[in-house]
Image 1: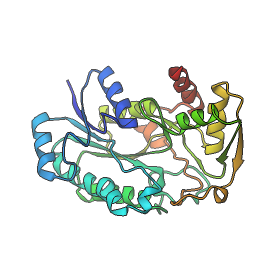
Image 2: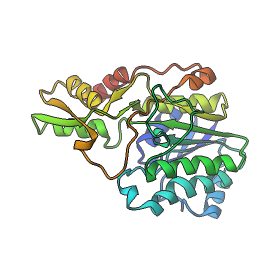
Image 3: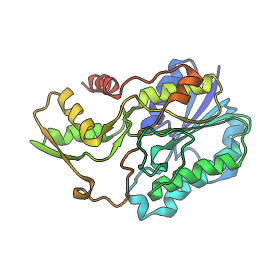
Image 4: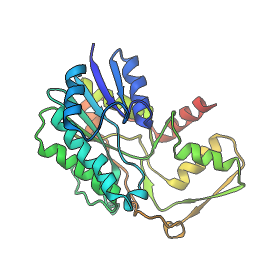
Length: 281
């Protein structure tokens, strides 16, 4: 039986999905939360790995408060950069899968981003996540997989979809940004992709998202429609909804490398969203 340590597996949006997917696959999935080990203590991480002897380690822990990171850059750096470096040093012979983000890109592309495209993060969050990738790559780990993803939704924790539906039940009109376009991703599908990468021992840099693209406004509109709510979703521009951190205007990710390595062709985000909303009912 394969043993996997899942950092973020207790309460994380992706981590909880990973626990379900790995357990269903017959793996011994061990959830690790921030209360289980000092993430910034290399010796404690070494001891955890020595005690559990995992064949696979998945890092689904991150500092994801994108706007707050602008005011707390050191805290974002500790979780998004320092922790991956320490985990990489503690991983030993395990296959380490590290989850990163579309925010490493600047959003100026005119086609979906390849894993090999130049990076240019525009926010503290994006920069610290990129530095986490770079720290791991500098270690020269023989069994390292970095997976960039985006715009997560799924069960187990508040996310964009649940927030939109909550607001839609309270208001007749919602205004949502239309000029940021990305790759909405169902955590269950992302977890399945991570499992597939682990199974075939695919090392390197990959993108894993659902197929298609949407603006935040289009994503909200589809969620409201599928939920059968009468709320009107109106588009607004980013300048009409100022946020502390700069977001990429376009961060759609290309998943061809994932398909080549695993045979998985991601399904449409709209189909995945429909499944997620059915599960909420």
